[in-house]
Image (cartoon, rainbow, N blue to C red; front, side, top):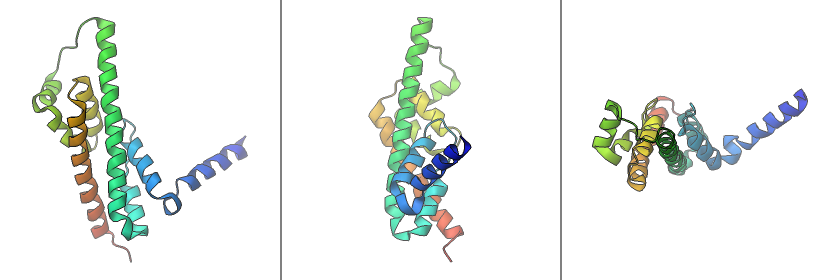
Length: 162
C-alpha cells in the first residue's frame, strides 16, 4: 500500500512540475489558493518566471485568471450559504458591522480580494450579500492582477536570477 501511495504522489508531483507543465500548474495553484484553502500561489508564479523569464506576462495572466475564478467560486459559496441559512431559519440574517461595510462599498470592496487572510472571506461575504456577480468578478480580477504584478516583480527584484 505504501509503495502504491508513494508512486501516485510522485506521479502527481511530476504532473504539477513547473518546468514541464508551467501555465496549467500556475492556473490550478492560483485557483485552489483563491478558495478558502490556505495556499499561496505567488511562489509558484515566481518560480516559473525565474525558470523562464519570457513567461512573465503569461504566468501573471494565468495566475490572475485562476485566482479570479477561485474568487468567483467563493462568491457562489457565500451566496449558497446565505440561502441555506435563510431557508433553515426562515428569516434573513441580521447584518453585522463588517457586512454593512462591504454592503456600503458594494462590488468595489472586492478590489481587496487580494489581501491575505481577509480576501477570500471577502468574496464569500460579497456572495452572501448578493452583490452583483459580474461587477464583483471584475473588481476581484483588477485587484488580483495588481497583486501578481507587484509581488512577482518585487520577488524578481529582491531575488534576481544569478
